[in-house]
Image (cartoon, rainbow, N blue to C red; front, side, top):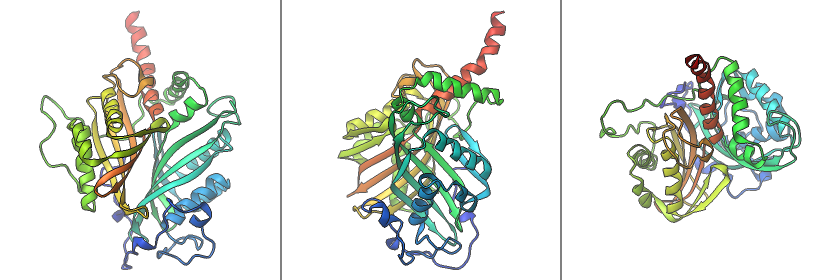
Amino acid sequence: MATTTDKTEDAPKAKTPAQPKDDVLQCERLDFVDLVPENRPRGQSMKGFDDCYTDIVDYIVRCTHKIWDERDVGLIYTHYTHNCVLYGTMGTMYNREDVVRDTIQRLVSLPERRGMATQVIWKGNDVDGFYTSHLVTGSGRHSQNGHYGPATGRPFVSRTVADCMVYENKIYREWVVADQMAIVRQLGLDPHAFAEKVAATKLAQGLKSLDIGETGLMMGQYPPSELPLDTSIASTDLERSTLQWLHAAYNRKMFGILRDVYAPTVMYHGPLMKELYGITAVSHQMIGLVGAIPDAVFMPQHVCSVDCVEGGTKVAVRWVMEGHHLGFGGLESLGDPTGKRVQVMGMSHFHYKDGKIVDDWTVYDELSMLVQVKLAQLADRPAAIEAAE
């Protein structure tokens, strides 16, 4: 499993200097045709990358579009290493062939889906390797039978964030958080029946839990650690301060700090396609997540940032929470507390202007948590039946 210090420094090194980020495309104000230009000079040195890619944002947006929207699934063979690892909210894939098969299955179920790049936050260069955090807004219609069941014909829209480690045209590690619960609900499916079906499949494969990370719970009767937060994964003061306030809010339950870091007019773009406004709304969402798993530890695993053409800076944080379903909160589908262990892999993009967050895009998958609870309950049944007998 990934460590909390995944860095692009793991890739091979040479002597070429990094290119300035000012020359790289950004998604916010450009139409799609401008994001995948035909005759643009390279804005970055892209040694080892296909000639069509002019910078790392162009690479991420263009190859994603080719694979998913133009259906050139075979490009995965030239854009992923044979031993790539893909960490998802329902489990992990450890090779390229599984990525190919999974992509085809998703296209079977949602053949009309289109994924639009919302933003790409990145770090690195073609010497050390790139790390990207790509927020996508997907929309379409459920027009074919597949893993969601018989086609409903219903439209949907959902968000996904994919974090990739890239070296010389190939992705060798990827983390994907898709808001599958948003899709399930919009298709009119029963989340509990769907989650139990997925859980039963996992149990038949010999799994009793979905491991997506290990954060290390605080043990015994001690309060949260007073030691300084480990910010070694951060590269800038803003990245460090972001990790500090996240630690204060999630681990120390000091939710009042949100008044210091969010603008009064903040827009929150959350799971289940929530669009909320103001600090109170953001606070309610965070408290709702913590309320459902109150013993959870929040562990950031990666952070990076870029200056934004809209002004200010955007910061991307990949994080994991681990705890037990001990309370009521914003995860309504989980229902009454079950006590089952739950892991949450999430991605957040924060847009800072004048020292305050004006936009917060946060994605995690409530369906994954419901599957984890159902899987634990299914695994308990044989022991419960034996005890009853």
